[in-house]
Length: 111
Image (tube, rainbow, N blue to C red; front, side, top):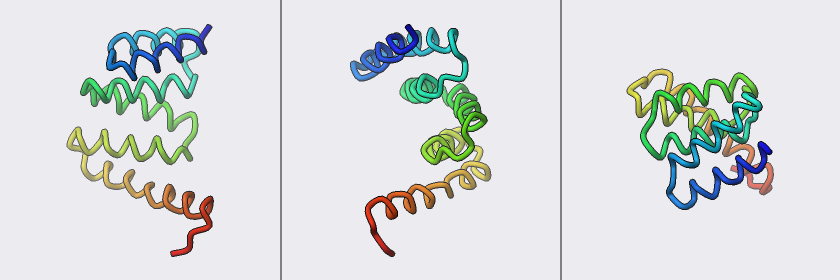
């Protein structure tokens, strides 16, 4: 059931129906509060409607579950910067280097 709600949320988000998408992701999290895909999708949908404080909370939860999630660190940094928390935001933004390193390794690119 949670997979269906998560997919429905993705469909609604792609259609620009962010509030309905958020309802679907929230439904998923009522069944499993640590479901990473739903947390990420919820954070992205909340970003679309400008709920920066809630976005920050979701990314903190995501990073509690997986502290090495480079994309989550990057998106978290954007939310922090948008909220005016520049010191912590720029610190988190440094994770982009890890993302670039990962891309380089997978594509066999040397710098």
